[in-house]
Every structure is written in C-alpha cells, then in structure tokens.
Length: 62
View 1 (tube, one colour):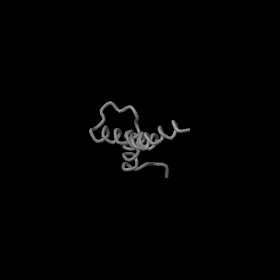
View 2 (cartoon, helix red, strand yellow):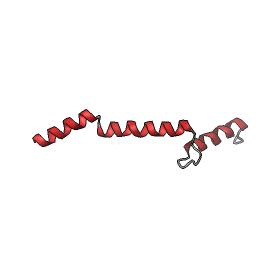
View 3 (cartoon, helix red, strand yellow):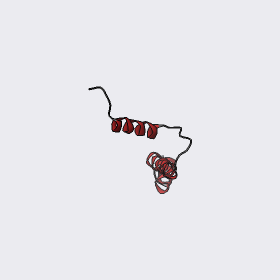
View 4 (cartoon, one colour):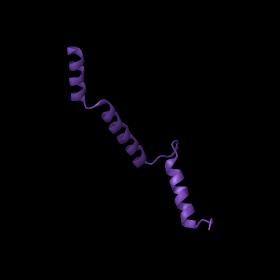
C-alpha cells in the first residue's frame, strides 16, 4: 500500500514548504515569529539586562 492519497501528498507538500529556510515570500506572521524566536533565544542565552549587570559586577569582584 505504497500509494499515497491526495491528502497525504498535500500534507507532505505543506510540511515541506513550511520547513524551507530561505522562503522569499514570508508572511507577516512568519517574520514576527522569527523575530520573537530570536528574542527568546537571546534572552535565554544571555539573560535579562538586570541579570547581565549582576553578572558583570560579580566578575569585577573576583
């Protein structure tokens, strides 16, 4: 039963299109989600501003 139904084929096509990294015509929602993802990632990796200031002070004290 290797024949794919039309719905399976459509689902695969949609998933493939959504996984493309270099889409030229990104929707507004895609662009906003990308921005939020970058912000969350930066905050996770670097911490909040007040946390960074505390970390700088701790490094100076050592």
